[in-house]
Image 1 (spheres, protein in one colour):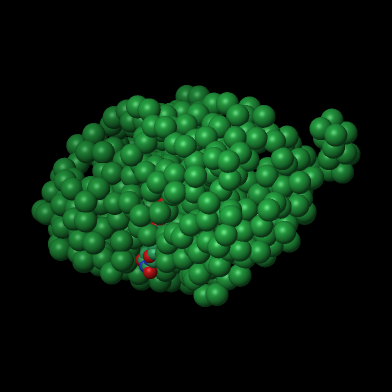
Image 2 (cartoon, protein in one colour):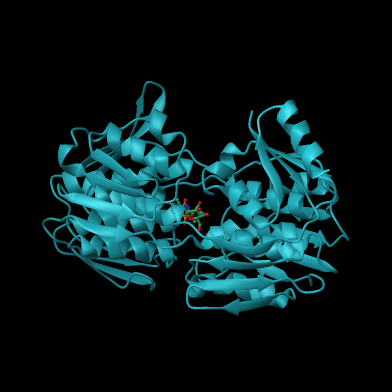
Length: 434
Ligand code: UD1
């Protein structure tokens, strides 16, 4: 099995180019099948979640032309199925966006219930509640032992929908379906994440009429038809935040390029509190570590609050801060699974319920650890980069779901990290880096 081997202790220095946002791209790809004209999406990250969704889109008959590694042309004219099978869904959660997209365009969708990172129970009741409000019949059906969600309607009619919580997935899914509903849909208490705005922008450039994305209330004036367009994915806020944390953790200085600094403000302000110097440019931020890392407190919240997807990486940095830190996870109930791994590297973190109490230590020691999910995997890599000696990170398939060329980008900043698949390669690496 492929794993990372890391020799820690080197400050990371230099520049890194951030890829397109995975979570935005997943919504954009689903939106792209809502017309029978060609939609070109640029700046797609080359990560396994995206490639899986593209495969699912091809499987229902859409014509997909991969122009290059980061550009795809999708033509939904050839779609001949509304059924997305379990094989596609088990690997990525966001293929549930095909539910909103197919229901919107064909008033008919049959999608296996979602997989993805096991970071909590992750229900989709808000999605189904919204589809029903638009007039769809939504049912669960057991097909060959797998749960399928079936949504059908003669027509979708705009309605007023109030979400119980600001769910990113439900907000995007309902925007997709309501774009082609009759009349006006208002969705309140919606998610305001940058990727919600990105999906609304793409839909609008396809002829939809969506107002208010990025605020608490989105108004969608349904249109009859969407058309083709060309659109570029926004930069990945979480990938950028991960490299910002890597600079802080290793005592380095990294210019993180191709970002939208305003999307990073909650991360920036935490790092400043922790003693880093952060300089913002038009489309880049530089993070320079301070002399030591100061402890802090943080709570994950919907955007513009501190992102749950940055919680593990920041906890890894705080494991070596001076004094006590507290991290509260308020979005997902099972997102501290990596803490045991960090503790095996010498961290002193105690989790009680949704709170991690971190007693900062002087340094971490290399160990063999395993990535329990995507962002926790990135956190363990950061821990390995600051630890003394060698760290092995197993189960890196999780990391590859959301980070393009992670190890190459880190090596470009001076890190000693290699993706290896056997002991011989690991020994070679160890001999090389000493
Ligand atoms: C998306 C992101 C994920 C991120 C999360 C929160 C994608 C593909 N994934 O996930 O990386 O961690 O936002 O920023 O964009 N909930 C319900 N019922 C629902 C929907 C959600 O109870 O119908 C709850 C969830 O269990 C969770 C909270 O609402 O506690 C937020 O979830 P949501 O924003 O929907 O997350 P995802 O869209 O799954």
